[in-house]
Image 1: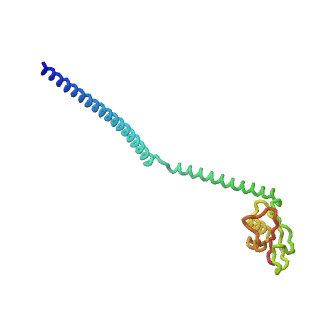
Image 2: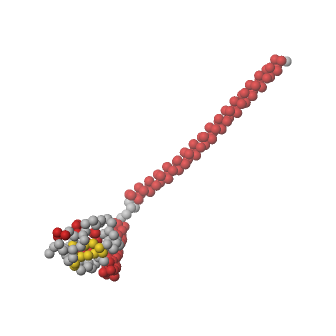
Image 3: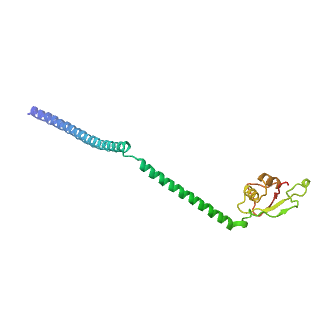
Length: 190
């Protein structure tokens, strides 16, 4: 009886081991089936993308092959561009006229348009050996630059350069003009 029990015990252990092995095998098979399904779904998605790209390429080839822009379309586009350019030029002219009007309205109050009268006095900025200089006194205003001041005088027919203004005003810093400070603008040699 002991033998039968031993055999029965061995048989039940082997049966349990076989059953556990079957369960592990079944689990691996199920896992592999899941992976195969995932791969199949991925392949289906890739196939759909490839089909869509092939269709898009085919459509682009059809458009490029014969159904693209023709001469009439290009002429219409050219006409539209010319119309836009005409409107741009008309707008430019209108803007320039408006700027001119604004310049006339602002006129002499800007300080650059009408330089002060000629003075013959020697200023603190001139050298004593040179004697009296002919020129103009100018009061620096907000937003002035030496270039703008020189240009305003040139616009009035007085030929002066920024270098001449700097030489006539020693110590003047062209990058830091002080509003309200008087400077001397030399008159051109006659």
